[in-house]
Image (cartoon, rainbow, N blue to C red; front, side):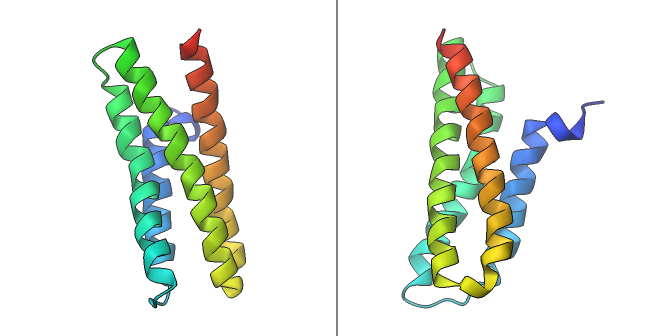
Amino acid sequence: MKNKKYDLEERTAKFGENSIELIKTVPQNIITRPIINQLIKCTTSVGANFCEADDAESPRDFKHKIGICKKESRECKHFFRMLAKILPEKKKEIAVLWLEAKELNLIFNSIFKKVKK
């Protein structure tokens, strides 16, 4: 059985699910709609691209998909920062997801650098 703490497929799926739960509570208006849209895309993309990397057809394909995970997790950090600016009352909840995006980004950066060699 995999150690859940280091099961990246599960961790990235939970990140997407937890992000969706928070995003569902965001009031929709002209400012939040584009941020909501981007967050849904990037937070769920991290896990989807990790699954693709896990089933990569070649080392080059793996590296490419991990690179996408790296970029998407960094994008999540940006949009969570914007959301915290829009909704200061949810800053603590957002900070938890921002931190997870940061940790995932660091993990994918590390994997990407190791594959690069």
